[in-house]
Length: 245
Picture 1 (cartoon, helix red, strand yellow):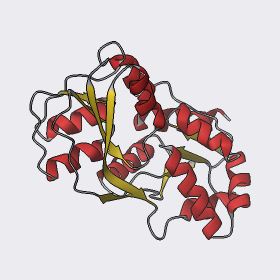
Picture 2: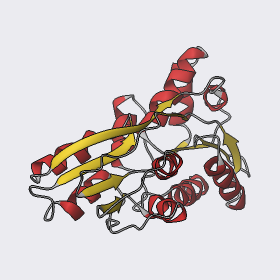
Picture 3: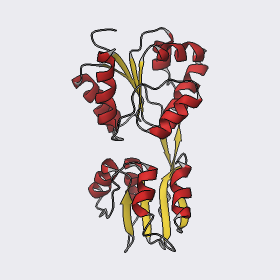
């Protein structure tokens, strides 16, 4: 392992990537920024007849503000503190943040309250089915509004080439889609199998169990799943795990 471990990060190319790069550098890693997600807005806003409106990302919070969403008396729910902070920054009150910052955590937090209620889920086109199915099982009338689409940026794949060459020490995957897009970029570069082999010798961190399951389905062995589903926890535990190997 290199004294300064090369660590890939796949956040969208905005302030999230900048903060991730700064954090990894502060942790003693050499960041390899390789955005695997780009946002295409639909300009949609949540339905106005819902009892609950659920947001699952900072991006969604920013986009509904840009689109002019004005809530009335809905209960506004955020999947975690980053989403909640983004909503508050845009001037929205947040009524509920689950203890576990995941789709299943949101279901657990709402399941006793939503029987017969109208629940609006406002998110990307790649949201987990766990949230919709869980709320429906709790008796809610669920509607999903797609606020944005997540696509793979052109030119992505530097980290896949490094992994294939055995020059990547760690990777921090922040969603199932970043795993899928990483492998798609590797295939586009003609190094998919070599990149998987390279990651087998690296430390692979993922932000939660759904991402871990996706990684496993694609033959990618996971070393780190932080208890707290935040990028800071993911980065800290991944870099620490590199040092332990």
